[in-house]
Length: 553
Image (cartoon, rainbow, N blue to C red; front, side, top):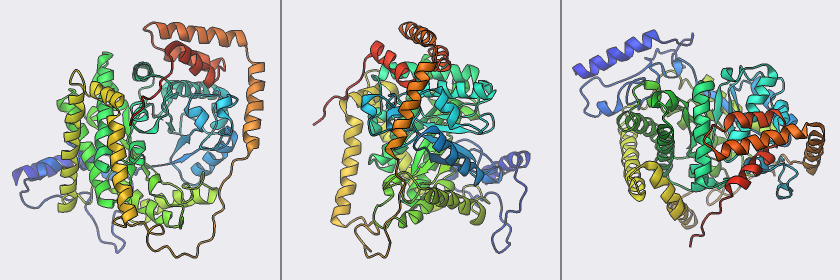
């Protein structure tokens, strides 16, 4: 019992010293609630559970939980051109959103310009079209980049997009050092699940290493890498696979930073994570708790991180797009609310709630507002912000947390054994080459689909309770005029710029790529000169070649 009491005293001291929001924390009936609850008698499990704000961080990173600050409401948005998306961003911020999250269209995600023949019919359809830094200027027009945190969900061409963002901030008068936000950049998950790469793994890792070095030195608050489990889960993985594959990728990036001679206590706080919140309520909560605990232990014991911030697993969560149904789409509001609540009870730092119509198209303004209000109802009405880790100590939740941790550790062992050198990076690269990750996810997806078709797994409106009075939805459609106008503007920009300066900046970028220098500064210069995304990526494709996934049968 002495250990419990001393732990509670440590937590209390840290809680008292931390800033807290000025409000009453009571139940709806007016009953006072403590900021955290723990065992009243000795509990052998408690060493693995602990108190909020201390190692192993199972119960959260901060002693105050959401009493210190709530999660950031960060709605994922992007469609059409930069001006249209800018209007949506202003709507989100005006309605109470706390940060922005940029969705890019498929040509941008693949490092292609809007007038590339391969972009035909895709411009502005699954996100916003960004061709040069001038598009980035328009995207954030009237939105001070020094005051708003921005997440950008892009991996293959993440570094040139980041450079355009830095230039847009410069043009607003915001120094790069003042920027705060997150860039996805996670190329491992592209080979594993999403398939949006430009080059073979090694050149991508070169760019990621350069970005990590640059941000650690020049933009310390910015997170240059968001390790994504979301796309792994959306591809069909189980919760345990999402947990293990995502953290393994994170460990690979830690090994990349260490191989560059970077101090783990300096660069590790720049790593963040992006998880899926699926429909199995308690399993998702347990997954988030296990993720914090595993990351903290590996960072301390395997990679030598000494500071708490370097041991923290910070994560953004998005509700499960794959759980949404085209049948009875209004049911998606309920699914999203349940998934969002799981993310909050799991301690997420920021959250995106999917719109009810995203299974059919980009969200309409009405559906986007409902998604935003879903988070606000949870934050303002349910009182779940009152207590840190309110499910901590639940026999079920703790057992699930332990089980997911055990399964993840077994997968880590398998990945390391696959590699030639026993490192996580070596195992990941071998697993990509051999198609092991794909086959594991495919098997899990097949098993789930089989259960659906046999009726063992129920989805309301799909294979049960199918009668409905719903009317067809009005969905957002992107006009072909968006593509025509984007291409007209792009041609005018090319005609107006200093072509000799563009060509010189691209040549300098290639020269640095052939050596060992950091590629971020010359890429920023390319963006300043209005080199397009496609031009930057194409000169690197010419230098490094492209990558074709080996066939698997």
